[in-house]
Structures are given as C-alpha cells and as structure tokens.
Amino acid sequence: MNNLNNKKILLIICGGIAAYKSLEIIRLLKKSGVIIKTILTKNGSEFVTPLSITSLSQSKVYQDLFSLENEVEMDHITLSRWADLILIAPATANTISKLANGNSDDLASTVALASNKKIFIAPAMNVRMWEHNSTKENIDKLKTYNYKLIGPETGDMACGEYGEGKMSEPKDIVSELENYFKDLKNNNKLKAIVTAGPTNEYIDPVRFITNRSSGKQGYEIAKSLSKRGFDTTLISGPTNLKIDNDVKLIKVETAEEMFQATLKSLPADIAIFSAAVSDFKLKEISKTKIKSQDSLNLKFEKNIDILNYVSHHNSLRPKLVIGFAAETNNLKDYANKKLIEKNCDWIIANDVSNKKIGFYSDFNEVSIFYKNKKSNKLTYKHKSKISDEIVEKIIDHLN
Ligand code: CTP
Image 1 (cartoon, rainbow, N blue to C red):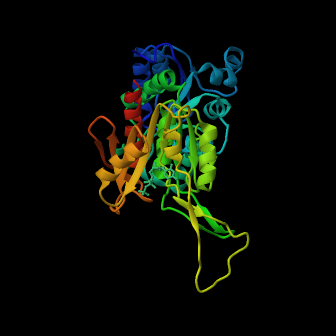
Image 2 (cartoon, rainbow, N blue to C red):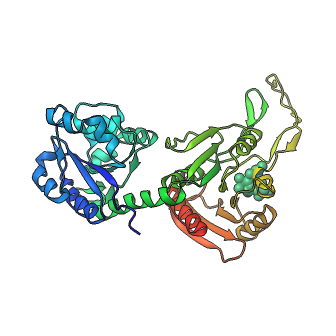
Image 3 (tube, rainbow, N blue to C red):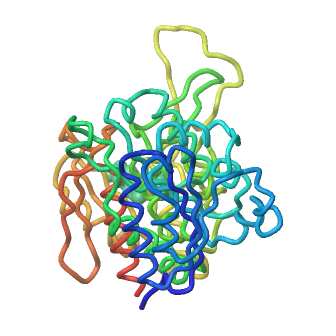
C-alpha cells in the first residue's frame, strides 16, 4: 500500500551541494503520487535551477517572500497550511540556526515559522559545522519544537573530508516520510505510556535515597513510539533529559507521585515500565533537616509496585504490558521470574554489571523475554536504535 499517494508535501531546498539530491527526492515523491510544491532559497538557487525543479515536480517553485504574484495566488500562510507535511532537504547550518531562533527573513523560514504541520529536516553540512556546539544546540532546540530529524549520515563529503554531516539518501528520506504517513494511519488511535528515570524518596527536606538511572532508555522509547504515531505519555522521575514536544511529559519525583501519574494516564493500549522505582520509602519523613549525629536509625516501608498493580488490574491493564529488569547476575532466570510474577507480556532485561552498557551510557544491549516464545537479543547499539527496534517489535505484535 502506498501511503504517500495524494499527500501534499512542501519541499524546501536550501543552498548546499546536496541540493542536487533534492531533484531525486522530487522524482521519487512524484512516482509515489505526491503533490509537491517547492520553495527554493536564494542560496539553493545557486545549486539547482527553478526550471529543473518545475520540470520534475510539474508545479511552481516559490522563491520570494515579497512577491505580488504569490500574495494573490498563495501567500506564505496559505502555503504552510496547504501542505500535509514540510520537508527541508538539504537543511543547511544557516537555515537550522534561523529556524531554531525563530528568524523569518525569507520565504522558507517564514513558512516554517508559520507552519502548524510536521516538519522534517534532512541536514547536510561539513562534519565540523555539524559537530559545532552551536549547531548541536540548534538541533536540540528544533527537536523540542517538534521538528523531525532525518540523518545526517557519516561518510565522504563533497569537500573532501570524512565524517557525519552527509544528507541521507533520497530513497531513505522518502521512506521516512512514507513511514510517517503509514504510522499516522495505523497508530494514531493507540495510546502508550512509558515510565522512566529514578524516583527520589525523601529522608528529610534535603536528603533522599534514589536508584541509579539516567532515564535515557525510557526517553528514547517514548521518542520512538511518538515517531511511529503513538499518542505517547512519558512519566519521568528526575532526569536532565529533553523530550520532543509531541510526547506528553509528566514530571514526578517520588514513587507515589509516579503511581498517581500512571493511574491518571490510564487507560492506555501499551504501557512500558522502564523506571528504576525505589523499592522502599521512609516510614516517616523528618519535617526538619536531621542534624549530624553518630548513628541514624531509619525505618523503611515498601513502595507500591506500579507495574505489578497495573498488570494485575482487571479493567486498567493495557493490552500490552512491558516491564524492565536490570540485573547484575542470573539475567535469564530473574527476567523470567519477573515476567510471570509481575504478569507482564514482555520483560526487557539488561546486564548492568557490564560497564559499557546500561546505566548512564548512550548504548545498551538487551534481551526481550516473552511468555510463549523464545527470547530475542538486541545487540550492542545506541539506545535510540534499541528503542526503534523495540517499537518495531511492538508494531509487529499489534499487527
Ligand atoms: N517497578 C515498578 N514499581 C516498583 C518497582 C519496580 O513499576 N515499585 C517496575 C520497574 O519499572 C521495572 C520492573 O518493575 O519495569 C522491575 O523492576 P526491578 O527493580 O528490576 O524489580 P524489583 O521487583 O524491584 O525486583 P528486584 O529489585 O528484587 O530485582
């Protein structure tokens, strides 16, 4: 099934050598039945001509912000509303900087700023420009503004250097767009909740006990779910992480707050419990700061097990309940035990005795344990890739 047929895509071509690849993007989109309009920036027109774009797209190329003809026919607001999706390819460091800072000094940046649609950007630039802190900050900002990043890739560059910054291949860009429309259609009615990060259990107003957890894997899972069209709520303990705007973020601190936020977010179709919830809380929290003393006698009581509560609930239990198990030994046995005792459909387990993976690392290696089939291993890779694979499996399971 072709999910791109009859979709309206506004392609913005900026000034970079990769602009020549945009012609191939137009060709592929046309082949899939997309209705294309194009904005060519002033710098973009140094690399490709309006004539070649029109010949391939069979429609007009927009170039000027202040054009009498455009104002009558289709002004910048109408153009941004017309599209089902906006693709900026190639997106240069300059355009990325303008979008991150809300500049609107040409037609492309004005349309992007005025848009209420999903905007995909396929960056293309020299590796040093891509790795520059200013570009990184701008990209981080754009992610929180709901922009979706495609690439860039690592490889030989037109300037002769090697590194990350190459624009993704046209076929890969088009396949990302196709996935976007496919997932919107299939998943947009499905709701997912994800718990992530540690919880803090207070001893007194300035001290707490907590668990080791950066929350990275849970945040990446929420991002992957949202990228694939799920209506996603992330319930997060204290972390320093950022999340895209299309994920609903509920910040909590204690296990009790996480539990209440989870109950409020249900019902859901899928629930993924990746949080490292503190098993214990203080029986009594001192209202004043405890002064230094030779010994301290603290009394603990068990926190509610959020996963266990939800997975055994008659009416609130989501169709798919996934728990996590971070283990230092006997991974398989403990994971299978949790699978049964916590009434999960899947347990995602990782070995946290390995320093290269797990806690605080950007990389992970996990095994997924199921009730009725053999476990799967997702080998060592970036946590974002592990999440994409987990979500891929979730979609396969739902289908
Ligand atoms: N979990 C939860 N609420 C708790 C404790 C755990 O929701 N109060 C969830 C975690 O988010 C995870 C799963 O239960 O998905 C397993 O957590 P883990 O800490 O590994 O399991 P425990 O039951 O605490 O077992 P143990 O610490 O003995 O390994």
